[in-house]
Length: 361
Image (cartoon, rainbow, N blue to C red; front, side, top):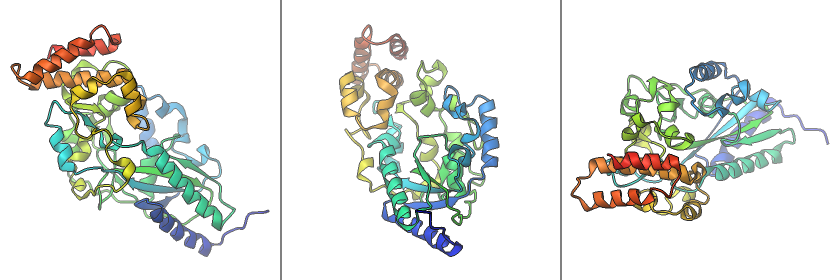
């Protein structure tokens, strides 16, 4: 059966319906953009040329397919971009946790279940609804699953602007949200790109523990705590260890202290609620997990992908920083040293080196 071609009026109606369906499916915002990303492409290639991506070879692997949607998926004319909020608890609690050295800080996006499947299923449902209207549709769903410039696309779709911290910001709710995309072959009307509202504020740049921002809107990932604790598979450079504090998986500081996030609302998504008290748990409890406990407790979690070695490495660094902040006569100081010492000879060389560093703090 040949496809039924949609006229201009039908495309406008469909665009409105898509946004309504998206909200009904649980997304907080839906926008539509074209595929022209030349400005973002230039910034990407400049960033890669400077080596700021570190060991993330996948950032350069696909050439310009990342910045040219129609090369990644031939026939793509528009991108439907969606926003799903995830903040699981008040920002004040997160900020306070950073000042409690014996507690673990885990990036708030990773406290609950992995978001990839949830977003993918909902985007597929959105595509299914479009298919009920037209058999013209050709599409692909993306949620961190291919070379996609999701923030640049979302900015063009009007979902927010890319802030100085390189995250997407929305005036009403801040930056605590996930993005997903639907590449489609329908010439839908596009939305107005968002405008930058960072102004003269540099909070995110100034608060960064490792000074990872080279300039506004430019991040050296090799210095970023999220990179060091998640993407980095080897040793964490010693010069960054003390600045990591109690952050054992990722870092939220540039979001936590952004004025626009004063308006952030907590997510009602059950999948994003903290599991196993990971939002407020002591480092020693996590350090004492066996590999089986790590695998079992973090099943369905984004954290699991870093592996048990990196998990112990990160916690060892945080425990070393705790030792530096807890008085020697304190019982907890003794317990931490005992736990660290007890792992020596039973872990990989890489983890052991971090434990030995921690014991010297």
